[in-house]
Image (cartoon, rainbow, N blue to C red; front, side):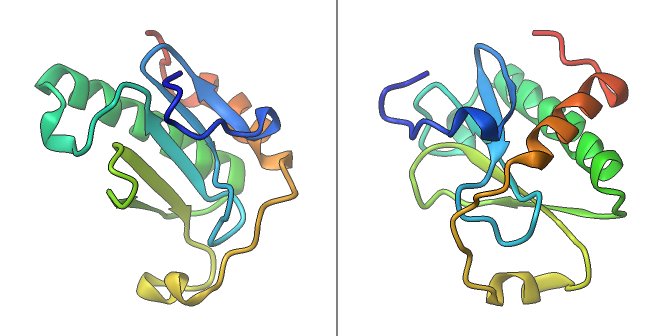
Amino acid sequence: MSSSLPKPVPRAMIYEDNRLYACLAKYPLVKGHTVIVWKRKARDLHVLSKREYEYLMDKVDVIRNAMLEALGIDKVYLVYMDETHQVHWHLIPRYNKKGFALFEKKPKKTKDFSLAKKISDKITQVGNTKK
């Protein structure tokens, strides 16, 4: 992992390979909020090769599907923000609040890591995670 990336709490990890990792968000908007981070330094999506972009989006899809199953929900919002100047996606489960109402909540640091294993276990059931 690049030394410039924040190291997630090991209990928060959902998936990791040589290109990216997925973990529960440090400051989640809702329970199950997950972040998928590209490990190689990349300021924006446009600097990824087509092959890298497709790989990233395939993993986003697999992890989103695992979240849908594990959390028993119908929708996961995909949010791309580059405020850290590093390619990463936020996968935000939709429970009761829809649309921008999710962003009105002031997030608190996560202390419950129970969903990491639950989502991780679903990854092998819902998609192929081969490198």
